[in-house]
Image (cartoon, rainbow, N blue to C red):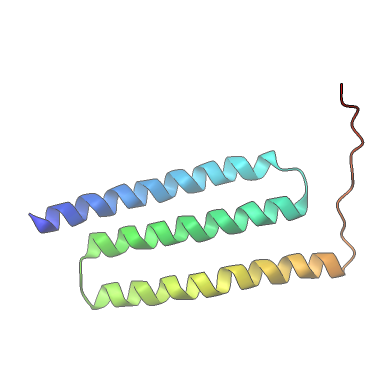
Length: 106
């Protein structure tokens, strides 16, 4: 009984992560400048990845496998923001700036 519940929770979390990542891809194309796109990409990747890892942990049950997935998730939590920061910082120091669009309101 409990195994069936864990399988169901794992499937729901996996589908939720894929849906979240899909919406993130669509949202990424809505933004126009580099810095907004890298921000949304980082958020979608981190949250989608963690939700997927929780789904895999629920699907796999409590075992040594779950500990390995937790360690992989921790590495993702640490490395994803650092790599995104490094990319954005190098773009900024390379001179990449956001061009302002003058819009007439009204």
